[in-house]
Image (cartoon, rainbow over all chains, first blue to last red; front, side, top):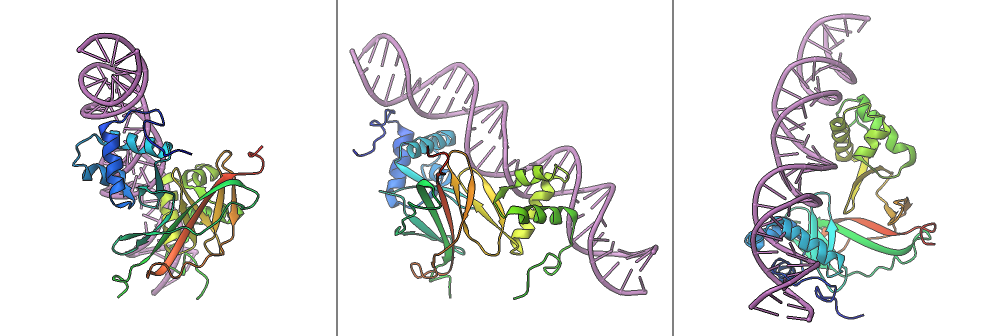
Length: 124
Length: 124
DNA sequence: GAGTAATTGCAAACCATTTGCAATTGTTGG
DNA sequence: CCAACAATTGCAAATGGTTTGCAATTACTC
């Protein structure tokens, strides 16, 4: 399996797409559509950011993760997990060590794990 | 720790609240606010169903789980997990065998695991 | 560099969820 | 059992994130 690319997937390499991808590649932390749009200085249209995110997710370049309140997108070699501090919202990555390939006779199982807790600072 | 109840938590035992609770107790499967409202024959106002769900969740009687597309509420002795068929949306319960109490120095860690796959029928 | 299809920006549309408020209801004390 | 009061509901309007139609623009191919 070759490296996934926008062009390789048959889509145009446009400014909004590149900008979104660059931003997500920066620190690999999950971000909301709106946060991404703002980080890009509202340079593009919010709708275009949404469209870019959908496309990037569809071709497998980025992943998304949904909490009760927000929907996040992140770039990673492969899906891993995140732990979010309930108090200060700090997010850290958590490697995935799970194998859920066999669950209840289901096949092609994929999973999303969402962890919340109190980070060391907020725990005091 | 006593059994959690609506009255015990200091709230009124009203029709919408009881109806929602009854419905969720029926099969313990996760359901969306709208589905609950429809199952109740639209007998109550959708807003009241939302308010009932928020309250029940707040006092710890029900739990919620969010996918990319939907937000579900379910009643259970304790949070467990669900696997959803990507194709027919069938949902089954999956017991929880994980201990995430210690993750990256975070404390009070709670987790939500979301599994998707193809159920035996849809796999053919 | 021109031609063409894909993509963007914008504004309007959508849709789930929330909210303000007057009317109704559950609960408590008498 | 009833009155009194605060909590809760129903309704309709507001909100807010996300999506969509469409004309204008852009990326890619030859």
